[in-house]
Image 1: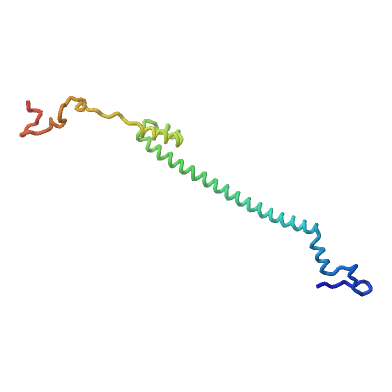
Image 2: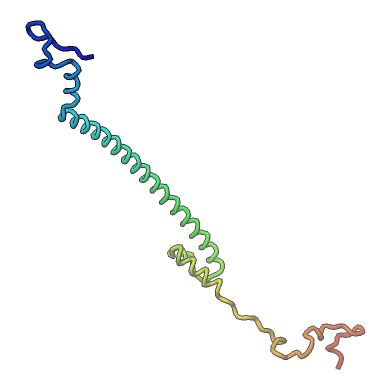
Length: 149
């Protein structure tokens, strides 16, 4: 709708007077107003984004604490299991085992698993009994074979 605003003498003079539509366009097209509006929108958006970042930082902090607690629990459980296992099979005292960290306890356990005890060799295996090693226990006609002489 374009209406001409009448001049002082009552006639519409479109040369010196603006229409209502042109006045509205001038208000919107004012560069300072446009910049102020854009800045206000960006500041509001910045505030929302900063709030989101703060919420995410809080979540990360809480999850980090939970992860640390879970890792401590797992480490203490692993250490107690290793200490119980090594206390039975090694000459370390309980105080020495408690002072070791989990990696050192694993290393002691792995070293112990790699260790092979010396093979037991009896006198019969050294060649003292020739032939069948069960021959002295063999019963022949109610008598032991060793009494055969």
